[in-house]
Structure formats: structure tokens, C-alpha cells
Length: 241
Image (cartoon, rainbow, N blue to C red; front, side, top):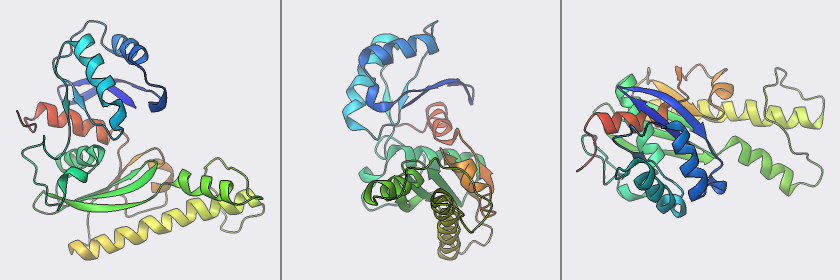
């Protein structure tokens, strides 16, 4: 879970908390440190962990004295969503699409390297039209360790060679170089689908910088993209009500 304070189009202070450890007390203390003067006038929540929603709502109402708005396909106006079942779109994916369209125009693709890697597509009309979901880098390597007796758990890092000289190197090459191949292949297919040879692609998330380093199709690495999408939605009148 990431908490951010921002205003006038800029994020100022932020802190990362382990989602599974978040309690009323921890969240209250953290918000108190981020906003000691109690100057928050609006609060946006982008949640993909439903059982934490009420904890966040209660703390924000008590500490900040504002009614938080949950970002989702129903609460956003001013951005088209052409998707058969809008309620199934993750809130973080909507936030990414909002920020990418605002910063880089349309069409645009966001690649978010989280627990899963997600591709989110905004077409040339500026509408969110869907995307792709694939296993995240850590999920892939953890699976190999957990399901194969002799393969160790590895710390993800770059390896220059394409021929591993140890089990760990071989796993890292398969993970990092192979993952880059996956990303490049999917971007190629998206360009064909959207008929856009120069389709702008922006990456975000934990492994964005590492993977993007050797993927020339990715033109921008933007670590704060999701939170910027929330801030833009709050400040630009994109929220219903």
C-alpha cells in the first residue's frame, strides 16, 4: 500500500506500507505523519484489496475529516471506458490509463510491473479499451523455486551474458532476458492491433526500470504514474459527484 500527499499537479510526500500489515493504528499514525497540519481537502483511494477498503475509509474520515472517493469504472467521468464489464477493471489500471493519457497523449500503452504485469491500452480517441495480464517477474521465479526441488530462490538483477555459468545465472537470464522478450513481443502485437508503428509506451511498477533498460519500445519509465493518475482525477473534475 502506498500513501501519497499531493497538490497542484505534483506529488510531494509518500510512504510504502506492507498491505498485509495495515491496521487502523498503523494507518492512522502514518497519515498523521504525512499530514501533520491536517490540510487534506480531498482523498482518493485506489484499491485492489477489498478487505482493506473499510480500514482505509474509516481512518481517512477520522484523521482527515473528509469523505474518500474510491476510484473505479463507475466513479470516473470524463474518460471513456470501452470495456464489456467495466466493474472488473482494476482501479490501479484505470489510474494508470488516466495519467498516461494526460501526460503522453493518445494512443498510449502502460506496462505496470507489479505482482502481475499488466498492459493497459488507451486508443487514439482517448478511451480505455482493455489490456493484457501476464505473471509478474517475481511470481515466475518464485514458482520455479517452490515447484522445483533443486532450483534456488533468486534475487532479481540484470545479467549481461546470455549463457549462464551457474544455476542462479541461468535462472536470472531466463527470467530477465526472457521477460524482456515477452514484453517486446506483446508491444509488437499491440502496435499491429492499434495500427500504430510509433505507439507510445510507458512503464511503471517495481521492475519497470530494470526491464525497460533493454526494451527500446518503452519510451518512458514513470514510477509515480499510478498515484499521478489519482491526483489528476481528483484535481481535474474527473470524479462523478
